[in-house]
Length: 160
Length: 160
DNA sequence: CCCTCTCGGTTGGAATTGCCAATTTAGCCA
DNA sequence: TGGCTAAATTGGCAATTCCAACCGAGAGGG
Image (cartoon, rainbow over all chains, first blue to last red; front, top):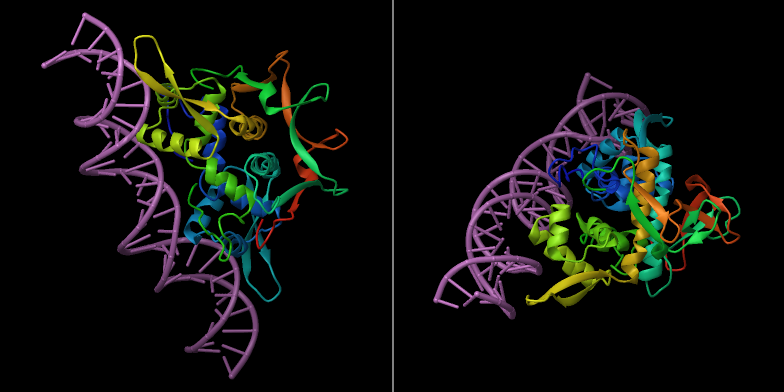
């Protein structure tokens, strides 16, 4: 959603709650799916379009926005016998979205499972052992979602 | 997004990738913000409307959808001297979305920080000590977002 | 030199979704 | 009867998304 401009009077776009600012970047339709595709290794316009079935105009708009936000990086590549074309690669910020994607996958698997079983699993990239997302304390202890509170931080204003 | 009907030919709504199914429930504009508000303790229509600044027609639609999806539960309450009214409470599934909200907060804080500092922090509900979201292995070891792979699960079909 | 192919987009127009203000509904109380 | 409040619903307009068709730049073929 690049559109929750000023939901609450008196809050400028910088001061708004972190969730709103994150959703401004990846909350629009198709954005997170593009990132998921990039995590799978896709890099080209046509790969995203074919794999997602997204309209090409929207795809172009989203790719540009993700590049501008620093989630993707646009690079030129050239295949032998072809002209130079564009490809899109995850930045560190884009890699970090694995956290959000993982949260959506895990939440769906846990609370809205598909009868046929999990459609996607998360594994350690090195040894292929399953991993899961959890809240952890400084001492390394895991907490359930109901044992965590969101509290205003230093920059909180009217809303957070 | 309750609208990625059949992005890819041949995939019915049940068989689609878990992310798409999760986004079908909470991917529409305002949905996650409503859940965030509920995590903060808000329960009433007017509280959501005033705190979010969301249009009341959209709010009504989203609340109904979240109730239908089992994220919120609609209850009746009565204040002395008033008629019976509706309130909305998180189910266990809704609580579970703390994972997704936490991921968005943490990603935003880490990669797109607001100059004034973090607007929201995550703490242990019991002792108020800070917590963070991380991928953890079965042995309790934490992994970074770049050390995790998403692989097809048992129910994966064309896409995942 | 022209014709055609591919990839990475643009463009125009219809359909859907979201926004805003005004109104409605239902019960409570005077 | 009329006013009050919370919870919506409605109508009209704006913004977003969708779809199909088109464009253009360079490569290769004839």
